[in-house]
Structure formats: C-alpha cells, structure tokens
Image (tube, rainbow, N blue to C red; front, top):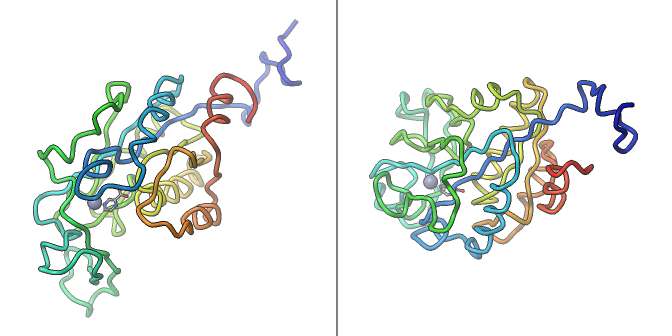
Length: 241
Ligand code: VGL
Ligand code: ZN
C-alpha cells in the first residue's frame, strides 16, 4: 500500500511533484548590517535566516558583494556625493557613441575585498552554506544580481550550482530587497524559464535600503512568487505550501 499524503501517492511522484529546494542568502555582510551601507533593521533577520539554514535545502548558497577598492559604484571613485547618479557603459566601451549606458546610483565605499565590512555578519551561520558566490568583483562593472552583470562580462557560478543539483525551487532571502535581492530574484525567474524552476522571495527575511516598497510588485510582475518563512518551513518539513 503506498502511503497517501494529501491525495498524492509517495510511490508515484510525477515530474511536477519533484521538489528540490535551494536557499540563496543574499549579501548578509557586515557593511550591510552595521557598516557603511547599513540597511534598516537588517540585524533582525540574522536569526530567522539561521533557522532557514537549518532546514534540509538541497543547496544553500551565500552571496557576497565583493568590490575592489575604487569600484565604479562608489561615490568616492568619482569625487561625487552618495546618492548621485552617473551613466556607466560596458567596460570595453568608453562613451555613449557605442553604448546607450545604464544609470548607476553611487554608494558609500562598501564590501571592499579583505576588509571586515565584507565578511559575513557576525552571528550568521555561514558554515552551513555549501558555496559562496562573489559579485561586483570587476572594478568597472556593478552587479546586483548573483546570476550575472548587466553585460555578461563576468562569469558567475550560481546557475551551474543550481543546475548541478537539479534545483526546482529557488528561495531568496537577505539584503537588500530593492537592489541585490530584487535583481537576483528576477534573474532567477529568467534562469528558471530555461531550467524549469520556480523562484520565491521570502518577504519576512528581506530588508530594503529604501522604504517605497515598490520592489515587491516589480518582483511579482517579473514572475517571482512572494512567500513567508513559516510557509517555507512547512514545505521543507513536507507539508503543502
Ligand atoms: C547592494 C547596494 C550596493 C545590495 C550592493 O546588496 O543590495 N546594494 N551594492
Ligand atoms: Zn555593492
């Protein structure tokens, strides 16, 4: 007799029942919690993210913003003020003749490689992570998404990590909701169109830099599903979403 769970027989799972979840913990670094680019209330999600890290995800990946000194996203690099906007171009193009450019908001120096602000925030159970993906490493390229930069000039290992495990469901938590979490989640949807996976953002385990809150609708419109950590926990413990 097959065991019946909510009308689904555990002996005969079909393709749509396959559930191989991955957790992506975005940029839980000192500078984004207590440092130069502290996101409001970010410390309050450390322990709840640790709880997620104790669940049986098939893959747990942490991302790190990992900038060289003098990174293009730093206001100090351009002798400009924090919050100013500039237009940046593909690193191999130097001007608007060959490239439409994209707008770049300028930040305080943050997450500089080999500085304490770049480390995972104290208290985060980073030893539970299977892999760490570094982004923003090219001096002339901003990279909010852990899937790749806007021009595809820096290779990122997140897609291959997900593919290697056959991940069906990607759960995103961390900082900042209106920048790296948003870009990573939207790119996860694009990845999922090819890989056949779904993307969820865990709303109560995300904090944003700004307070407009428009990131949630932007993510929904792009096909990201918004969920809360209680439902994720229930799903990981074999209850239905
Ligand atoms: C981020 C601003 C600059 C983020 C990274 O992790 O959301 N925000 N660099
Ligand atoms: Zn950054």
